[in-house]
Image (cartoon, rainbow, N blue to C red; front, top):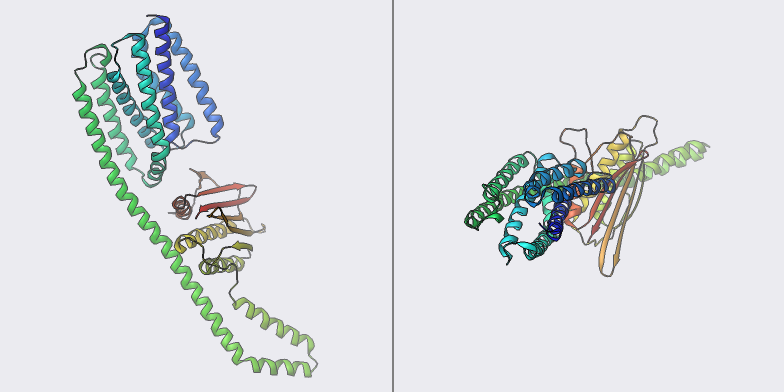
Length: 437
């Protein structure tokens, strides 16, 4: 075996390692710190590549090719352990799926080459694989990743069954292509088995996709109902508050003459301090009954006002700077859901802090338009404890069934091609939401 041919075989191995890494990075969620973990993975891959190069030049192509499958599996498992923040079932699903697609691309590249062996074969084989790998990775990054990450959030134990099915498909394809001999060492008399297996593979994946899509639709429907329920509840409470304020105003107008008589009597009797105290009490009562004017948007104003009142009832210092226009181009249900969930989480976070701690909530909301594109930037900051645990970028709730609020916020942000970020540092919890309207 010539040196040139061995170099091409080594390039094929490096191409496979690069494909494995990029395929995983296109779908999985990386652990923190990301840069460090990626650097460790690259170092491990370089070490494995050097070892494989030594093996190839010392013992020849056939032995190196027989070891390629266990080496690839080992590389994938190392990548999962080092980098993947997903559950094992999800990571293994990605691994077996990419192996299965990898085998199909290799077989198709082999079929498309014009030469049976030699340097020309290896060059053509590498070129075909490069084109197919590139197309698959582009599809993953451009179209598949967003939907796949949504499914990771929705599905739970279902991943175990789906991963098991993917594993069986991979084993089936290995048997077809590598037993009794590797397919490139004999005449192509197994193409019908390969085609049949991939037709079944695509059929099963399509079926899984349809089932999961139905689950996702139900999830969206339930989440929307939850947001609607929150909005309706808030509106009912706010309407009741406004009714009470109107009734109080009517009573005050009716009793205004009596208040004047009382004040006049106090002043005539020289009771100036009592008159001042009486007038201050009446003024404070009227101010507390009025609805705060937080912003121009009616729904946002009602929700922010109501939650600000709740926060102050619990001795939580609250500051709100909200610039939300009345004609905001956004579904009111979605906006109310984000504000109500964020404010509720902020209040609960403050109440979990020890007694005597400075409890506060600051809200900053700004809407801007640039080149015809609107952006809504929402930031909630509140005091919190230092033991908040994050899982998958979301704060882990200690309540039974908790975490729905933060998931709902993230879901709404995705609908508007935006982003959401939850962070906790130095006793300050921050919820940041950016929406493209």
